[in-house]
Structure formats: structure tokens, C-alpha cells
Image 1: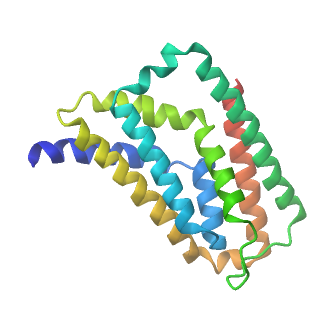
Image 2: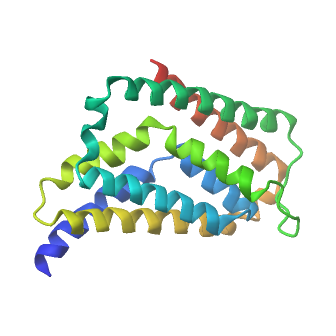
Image 3: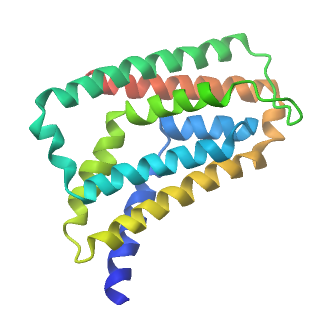
Length: 201
């Protein structure tokens, strides 16, 4: 058990610290958590996607980018294009304004379209691969129990996205004010464009 914990806890701490910073995926989860749209499906999609990538890294698949030189560029530019487009949608929402949180209102986007956007944000973002497959995968090699390290990293992802998705509703009273949505949309747009720009340069 001591060996398990000595690998599990560092894995949990590393993964949690990596996904804590605001990014495209977190912004998406926060926005839909506030709207209470498909929260469980979104949380599970994020966490399971992270789990797949983390396990791939721990299993030693971080060499994929080296084996396929074109892989990194394809992911980088494709991800930048999508993030720019998604940021544009939020910028338009911020410009138009008029939105407010109405917990009694029905879902404003279908589950299919919501998950399609989320999967694109997740799997087309090179930072996700760097954080999970490359970074977590390489650091896991330093620990005696790599399985425990990966389990800790995976649990951190499930914990974080569950707290973010379902905890967002506590901010409901703030986002009942239309101006708050405009600010959130503007922040998300700036975040998406910032990430896209960093990928291109």
C-alpha cells in the first residue's frame, strides 16, 4: 500500500495541477455547467478522454509524435483553426448580449452537437497531448508503480471535471445577469484565440 500511495498521490497532484488552469475544455464545461446543459455527459466525456490519453502516455505511446513527424503539425494547425472558430462564436455572443441564465429554460443545444464540439476541443488541442500523453507519460516512468500513478492522474481528472461541471450551478445567481454572460463569453473568446495564437506561433 505505501508503494501504491507513493505513486498514486503524485499522479493525482500532477494531473490536477495541469487541468486546473483555464483552457478551452474548462471554459466549455463551465459554460454548460452554468446553463445546466448535458452536464453529466460533458463531465464523463472530458474525464474519459483524459483517462484514455493518460493511460496511453503511461503505457508508453508518447513516442507517436516522434514516429510520425507530420502528426504534431496536423494537430497543431487543425486545433488552432477550430479554436479560432469557436472563439468567434463566443465573441459574437458577447457582442450581441441579451443572454441570461434561466434554469427553467430547455436545453439550447442538442446533446449531439454539444458533444461534437467538446470532442473537437478536447482531441484537436495539442496541449492536451502534451499534458497527458507526453508529460504525465514521461513522469510516470520515474515511479515504481506506474499503474498507480496513472490511476491517480485519472481520478484527478474525474474529480476536477465533476466539481467544475456540477459546481458551476452555484454561480447561477451571478449569471442571471445578462452582463455576466457577455463577460464570460468575452473571456472564453479571448482564451480560445490566445490558445490558437500560441499554437500557430
